Amino acid sequence: MTTPPIVTLSDDQRDCYQELTNVAMGQAADRLARLLDSYVVLPIPKVNLIEISDLRMAIEGAQEEDAVSAVCQGFIGSGIAGEALMLFNDTSFTDLARLTNYPGELTHQAQLEILMDVSSLLIGACIQGIGEQLEIHFNQGHPVVLGQHCNVNDILNVSNQKWRRTLAIEIHYTMEAVNVDCDLLLLFTEDSVLRLNHVIDFLLD
Image (cartoon, rainbow, N blue to C red; front, side, top):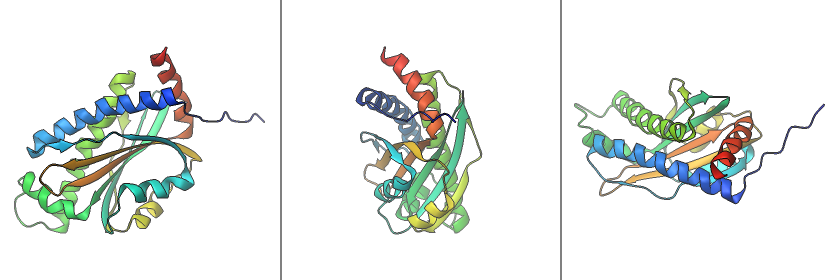
């Protein structure tokens, strides 16, 4: 029985992933800014190869609020697969409803619609942006709501991954002068990281 290759990440590869994500998140932020007519603040994305057991800390670090809402969406293309996890703190919904000119009362269903719309926009634009740079077409699954107004631990219990290690790319979006705060986590499967690193090495040559 052959031993599976060990997944690693060199400094050059990490920098390349970070640059690819910078471009993609910029495209996503531009779409969000146009939708909401508000300036989106973009930090440097975090790129880490982590054990699945450490995923809890990564998600807890991304969202420090007691109550969050989350959407998960899978993607796959050219043998590369992963999941995008979108986390919103619950204080974001009032401003999101105002910025999107959502009519009527901000009910539970209204918050769900806003959550799905904004998540689909950010996830879709970011995945597409990374795919275009790598010349990979990613097919995206249907977005799934993991929870509304719940604890991060509840999100983790629903999002039960079966991988040992994952390439985690964390993007934190905030908006100027409004209380909108969300995190996008891109999680690539262990097998996918081997294929991705091969593509990245080709770009680095």
